[in-house]
Length: 209
Image (cartoon, rainbow, N blue to C red; front, side):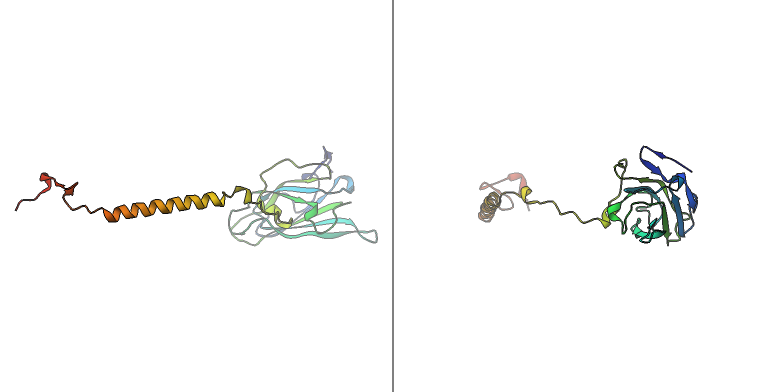
């Protein structure tokens, strides 16, 4: 059946369907049930991708009338920017409960629906799947920037503190302009002939006819 260790509910404990073998291009489904049919609150889902392009997540939880029902909490979450290329194909991903479209409390089963429309890859799945309850932090991994696509965008950092003083820049530009004008005036006044150096001729440079 499985067990819970250190507050971490491991996915490999109880697989209802789909198996652990990678699927062929198309659609694959992985169902996970918590030990002994117990309900759990889900805070975070962590996994490593293996050539899955899109991921949908459904959870089984109590309905308004009491019976448990399946609810879609994540729909077609993009894991690979382009299904035909390697980018994102083997990255770690983290899904938090605030990204979900439904409540993640009292969950008894989780269904992962994997899609890979590209015929380029022979197999696809998700690996190292872990589900964390509230209060349990996931280990730091090299998560990709795609994880934040469902979260509110952060405000860009202000650059005003890094800009140079405008008065100082203006003074330096004026000094450069004056120096340029002086050099230009000297070049216009200097008239040096082919063999004329300081008003003299270099005898070695003269040509005899």
